[in-house]
Image (tube, rainbow, N blue to C red; front, side):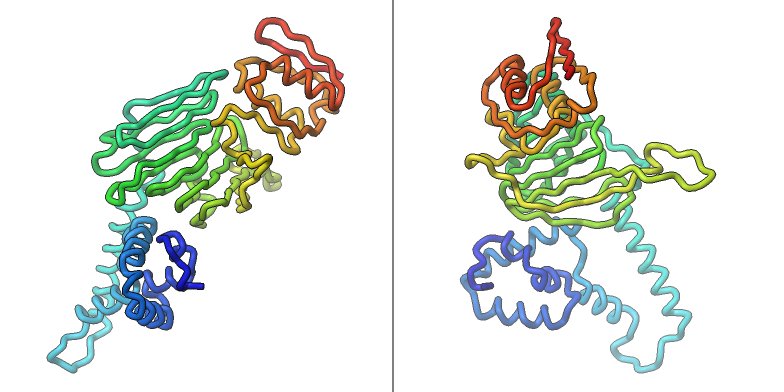
Length: 350
């Protein structure tokens, strides 16, 4: 199985290889050192996988190397006298200070806001194709915006996304590409993926077409870090919970994140999550309430649903280059409802 690994991503999906990179498991370290020595033809791809792992993990020094280094600093080579607890305390304090500084550098405090210079936006009813200064190709869905970080493509590549976008990232191992949304941060190298995170929706999603991405929670409510492989999708839900007794609830305080990882959805050889980039509008077990929001962004209209029962109607459909009237009439034939259009306003009733 391991002998079949061809790409860096194959190695990163192997937990024993990650433990080897971390130096956290001696057996894994011994196994991989032996395997690498016996497979010289794999040295190049293994080196690429180690480099990729280092970038995705924040370039931390492996645990075993940290221990060896600390031992060399704490225990004198030429002397055998014991180190007093006082010196251990000093060493521990210095280590904590060092790690705190490192964490501060890699993971800035949440109250420090990144500054963004320059932006690209697609209005409701339009889609936009953008080539960023580094060569990355971005497709913006309706009512979406990306903002580029200051000094983009100099030391790093930071992008803030509101809405939905498909990224085909230009590979540059020296400059990781970061996509930040309201709920999470994505770290990538050269890869293609779709991200959906609209400000007015409780559900965000990232869909990976090829390559590797690391996703980290951005709210502070969930400490998990997830590495996605090609063909996977992660969905991030913010669920409302009941406020504690005697306490007035607030929207943010009473929301708990729930994360799901699934495979991509394919219909008629199309990936549903990114079909919009080919101007395909696909509904898969969506109720009319969910469809309403997508139609509003797709066609730049305002839709009023005046019946709760109708809002719950479930549809499966696939449209390409159709206008709003054709879409509504097609849905109407599957499960009947009435609608009236006046300008850019549409009212749907039972």
